[in-house]
Length: 440
Image (tube, rainbow, N blue to C red; front, side):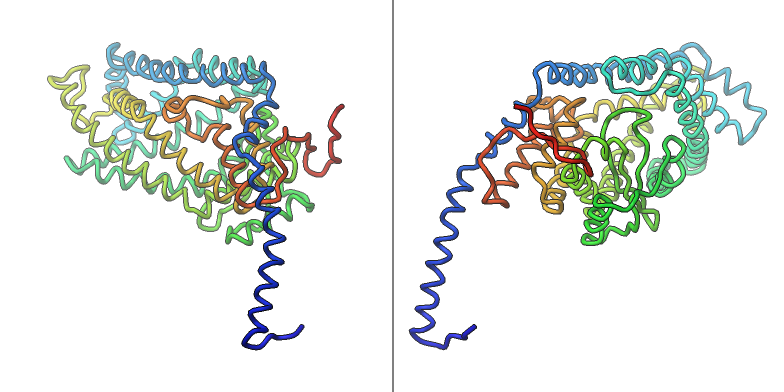
């Protein structure tokens, strides 16, 4: 290869190089212009049968009403404790336990609340899921998981509430500030502990066998400083056919986990797209960001409880002597439930924004826009694919399938200029299997 000197030789070389590059780039630019992200998105949407889309819409829209009913059921249970005098009588019966009365009261409240709510919970979380083909468990298996979850939430919740009431009783008017700080510590510990000690109580986690999927995911992790040295597969199919994955843990407990359903139902391109998204959450420190947002909201929630609780219990109503009286726990539940119910659009927007950021990261990492779009279609089996603008703002804690596919097609148009014009997506086979030939 010759090195051109200064003068006319350089000018000629630059001119020739410019013509050559122009000859290469012009056809590519024309080809890129032919790729319409909106049309490509519509092509993906058109692959979903009308009956499947109607079923998904009905399931998801029904969930809007379930949010309201779940809120009303919580209020009804709390009302039984307060108006029925159950909270007062339970407090008096447990008075002999001294300082242990508070955690025992919480456990009793949690168990009674579950019993009273069971008809609703059974319908919403098991029967309805089975009705829409999203639940693989029998009622007995589902109820067994519920009992494990109830035991964990009762014990951990009892310890947390015990400390919170101690803070209220000892720190007076500034309790809500210290309670918020304590909440940050608790949530951080749960992020560390849950993937290692809690999640295996519900599913069996096993290291993934060596192969293309494992190597691809570990390569993605290494290239983005995700400190995970192995990939775990867990048998989520015992609960449902939904696909899922996560990068969880902190401070040495970080692990990459994906469901057996993701491996069974998705191609390598789709798996890489999903895990690129999950790694985005980790690299972008979304766990800490959401912790900050939640801490602020919880802090104001405690302040709201502090200001309203005293007014509602003035004159010893329901036999409650003050905020430090554990008999007032049902009222605290009502106030907190109402507070976060009103903030539902705010919480959803916070989470949805982070999900969109992770989508963008995942597209740049995996470079699999079609894999991303096909994965979004699988999620659309139980999420309304194309909601209205305000419907998405109020009710969606993830971007809608339409917006996710559109984002992927825009990425494709900008990053893969030689992409073919928009066509309906071809049939693909799960990772490790032979390609599926399209039917004539």
